[in-house]
Length: 370
Image 1 (cartoon, rainbow, N blue to C red):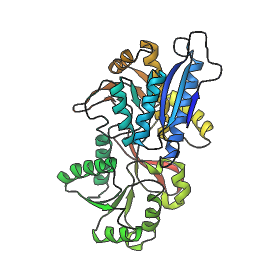
Image 2 (cartoon, one colour; image 1 turned 90 degrees about the vertical axis):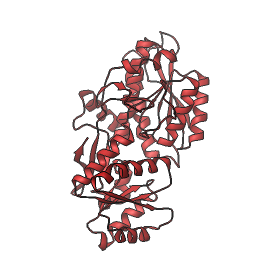
Image 3 (cartoon, rainbow, N blue to C red; image 1 turned 45 degrees about the vertical axis):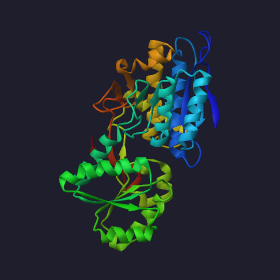
């Protein structure tokens, strides 16, 4: 999908539009629901920037490219967007795709503010061109591991698909849990059907099963199988990657999808801006906005401020990451370079462990904060 978005009524007297390239998964095998929410946040922010006068009187436009969760397709899109003269890149949800996009952005000298991907090694080498809003996986998944330990779970099974992202998450969990007496057992979902997976969980005496898998397949059949197995009545199902955040999870699983803790990048209370944006996103999406939609909005808010302050020059924009200070929907946004980090990172992104309330699956319960 190739689209161009500009807000209605934007001023056009200050010169040609300032373009931002947007990378979004909008078709399978990408997580289309996440992509739809990400794009809604990006587009809403572009509209608001236009209503506030644009970038020095110039309208702001999105040039959208569908990555379809394909790293090669994303890299080719970055090359194309660079040729089209975009001032910066925004977006992407899938970590392995964002990593490919970040590598090309670094090679081409194109500022890239990654909205949602959490993989620590977003680039192989440190770069000044790439920044990220979502917390690094090593931070978020350690918080999730602390939640599990605090809830009395030390024997953890992970149902994992082959992926750099899932492997990295498993490693974070194992490294954090082992010194604290916890164990992590890996179960390969490509080799086990849901019934056989349940047998393995019983045999390993695990008290928690984490879904390091895609959604809806194979996550939904696994959840259904576990919920119907009387041997696993006390088992906690977890999804640190956030699959239950989206309405599609609740539609597919109903009551079975409740009480599945996951990581969510929202504060307990949104800022006043966040409350206003949340209502506008709800109207745009015709459903409750996910944290991914807020990430999309904040991405454009940051890039708009950078472009207003430093113009559309790519090098100057990328050089401004450490000086950027923006009031986002989820709190003040500033960037730093944590030790060992290859990209600029939002210093204090909000982080929660939440689940859907069994008494009302459309309502979320905050179980832990990090």
